[in-house]
Length: 190
Image (cartoon, rainbow, N blue to C red; front, side, top):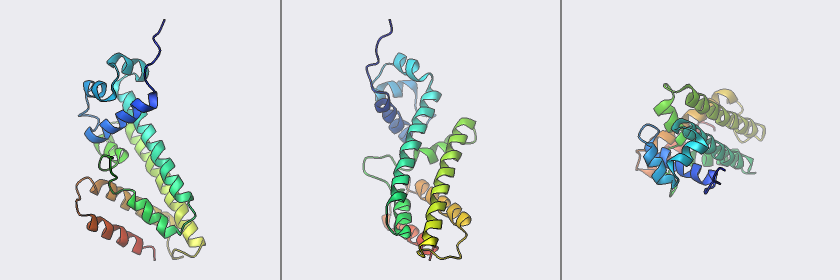
């Protein structure tokens, strides 16, 4: 008879997310995962299969959580430009979180080498671009953003800017610099 699991899957996935976020895929060994997640190696294999499958499950959970956070932000009834500001500011390091973004990190580290990771990253970027497209269209309909903006090009630009910020925060220590960049991005919408 199989032993019952002595852990909650989402809790150990959250731990795996943290470790992969800090160290990346290649630098994270199975022993690192065992130690950090606090479960036996056999349990990792029995529950998730191999390290790559665990990584993909962690990425999917992270992406889903991030998507919900961004969707919640967009659904707030605030001026669109303020929502875009909050969206961009979400890139700046949060207390208790590793620097940068696990999805961006994964795309940079493995996007060219791993088609499964590349597909997940591309899908995540597409969802964010759609969200930004909806924001731009809503802003134009409300008269909050200039009508001459091409929504598709503007959403692509904003996605690129957001991804740049999510990369830049890994090394930037000057918060004023990041704030200036965000303000410049927002100024393009006027």
